[in-house]
Image (cartoon, rainbow, N blue to C red):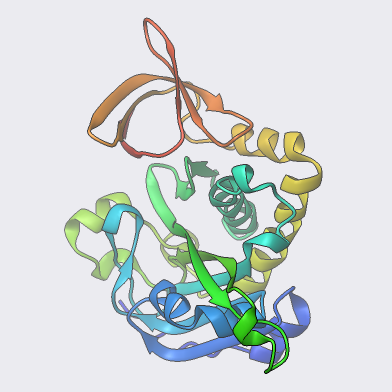
Length: 280
């Protein structure tokens, strides 16, 4: 079931209602993150920028996983200069969790009585089914500054571009998805049996994202308390693949640097990056 192959986005509304300075819209893209990488330097000049599409054909997730989507899904990438976040460089990995918490909080406003949770590091779930996938990436770009005469004497100044790729199942019913996708994913339409305004949901997500970026910088304990309170894995037995290793243990939370903390029989593991293979 394809409810909205060509959603209409209100670009002036997005610019007026959020912290965005620029929207790069394309009717169809293979991947909003890939387009963000290709256009990174001009997008950073106008950041915060948004790469937005009505249909994404080859979205990707963490570790190269593909992201299944169809018409009616909300797929976009926020592009920011990492230096503008107000976070020390060693705390920038928190942005992955910030994004997940922001989307979780925004979607909870549209899910009625459903419980919406974030799964480390940034997926968003309703029950045991994913409603949103997020891919956070950092890329360096070089820019030259100064007058035409002085440029040849100036070294390249490196900027770090932060790209937050977000895919939310909104009006795309998962009834048309492959069987394995239907078992592990859900959309707002399937949950609430109504068509949603994508502009409204996108604005809500962006406003919450801005709020939590500021909170992660100025009130990190408050932000992390929110992340832990709404964390799907809390108290569960979890298996995580990190590199070539598998680590098992009971999840006891997310620490102040964004690590997943697991308690095994013999020690505490702090995992900065990995794939959650299963939980129970």
